[in-house]
Length: 343
Image (cartoon, rainbow, N blue to C red; front, side):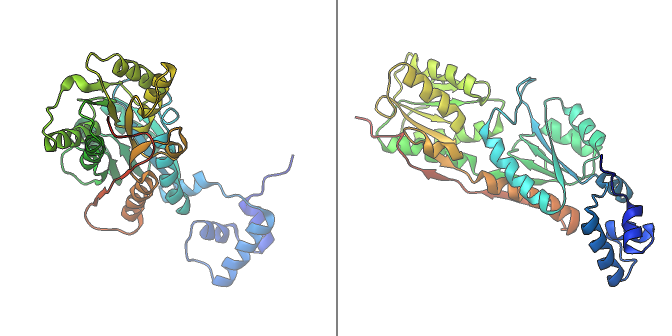
């Protein structure tokens, strides 16, 4: 077994003291440029891998950014695995963190007190929280003092944290208005949670605004809740829409994942999209353009959302930027093959 290279080995190879090597590893300007270059060459030639944990402890930094998904209910589902949206968002966060030499740590938690305990236990340098409620935010504000970015949070008090949202209400409007412009008047809406999800509430508000524009009354009976945004739940939602007492000619689903299950359920019943049902999603996941038929959907730039959330954290950590930031990213409608005029 090959012996692990140590700081002493690097020092011996470079002809310097172990302290000089430690200074270079910790970014301290206590040695000359000539000595610094000599140490760097020795590190490269010996293929020395520094103990990042020890370096972080000496700087009182963990080099970890937490990515916390607030669950609407206790769940044993691997939350970051069952929804493709998170793959794209996490990729954005991680690409920025990696550039700063940081790693990200993921967790899905529902109880407010567990959130601050998790942060403190992991000694995080920064935190990105997805779908936080007011109670969660107040708990974090009381107990931790690291940079925080709230993503997709609406019902939270003002505080010393950054905010990252998209224009969810406008997205709901664009989706419903598109279907209404095609002549559909019986438009169901598939959501994860109509009352316990601020994001869904915003998208429902946009749906209602479009109905009002076309003088069509809002019918609560046409709102179908899946409980979560998983393929399994969306299959049941598709079954409920198909068996609805009121004939439905079109559906606006608040995520592309919900669309996948609904489309599969209709196909299993021998029905065709969009001949028997027009459907619009939300997110524009990478997979959505490759479905058959390709999915009409409200596009949000999920990767940019992750990148800019991560950039907020590192601006607070390293640039001493005053105040807090709030960004609202725009959305747009991507019209494809899953919608057609009602005849």
